[in-house]
Image (cartoon, rainbow, N blue to C red; front, side, top):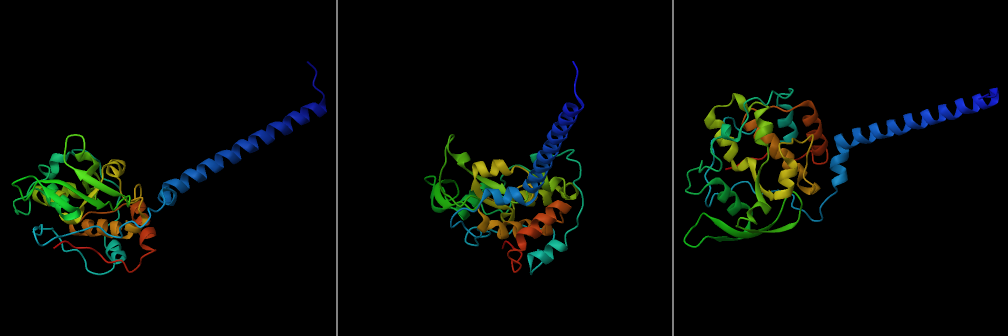
Length: 265
C-alpha cells in the first residue's frame, strides 16, 4: 500500500489531535478526582434543609461524667486544633473493638448501659420497656448527620436504623494514639458521651472509621459542631491528627471561626 506524503502528514496530525484529546481528558479526570477527595466530596453531598446545628452532649438528670485523661482546652476549636500533634497514621496492628472494652458498658455507673443512655439523651418522646427506666424501645428525633426526621423502634429488624456513632471512630483513634492509652482510658473513650451521637444507621455505616478528611455529615449545619467535637475528644484523650485531617478541619472551621470546644459534664 502506497501512502502519499500529504496523507502521511494528515494521519500524523490526526494522531497528535487524538493524543492531545486523551491527555486533556486524563487531566480533567485527575483534577476532578483531586477535587472530590479534598473539598468536593463534602460540597457534593449538599446541605440538608433546616438540619440541626449541634447534637446533645450531656444530661445531668441521669448521666454522670466519664473520667477523661486530659481536660478539654477552653476556647476556640481552631486554637485547640493547633494544639494537637500532627503525625501519620500508625499501623492498624492489634486493633479490635475489644481493645476498648466490652461494648456499651455502664462506665458512668448510673445503672444503665451506654447505648441506652445515649438513646435517652438524644431522642424525644422516649418510650421505655415496661418496668424499666433504662431500656429505650422507642422515640424520634431530627437526626444530626442527615437532618432527616427518624423514628426509632427497638427490634431485630428496626434497631439498626438508629446507631450510636463514635464521633472519633475507634479504628481512627487506634491509629492516632489510642494504642498508647491504658485499657481503662480506652474504655472511657468508647463510652464517653462527648464521643457518642445517635445517628442514622446508613450514615454511620458510610462513615465507618473515617476522619474529617474522608467523611463529613451531609447536613452542613452540623459540621462546625461535629469537627469541634472531634477536636475536643482528641484533645481529651491525647490523640493526634494527620495533615490531611487538620486541613479538612480548618476548612470547616473557616466558616465558623468563633466555634468553641465542647465538653461533657
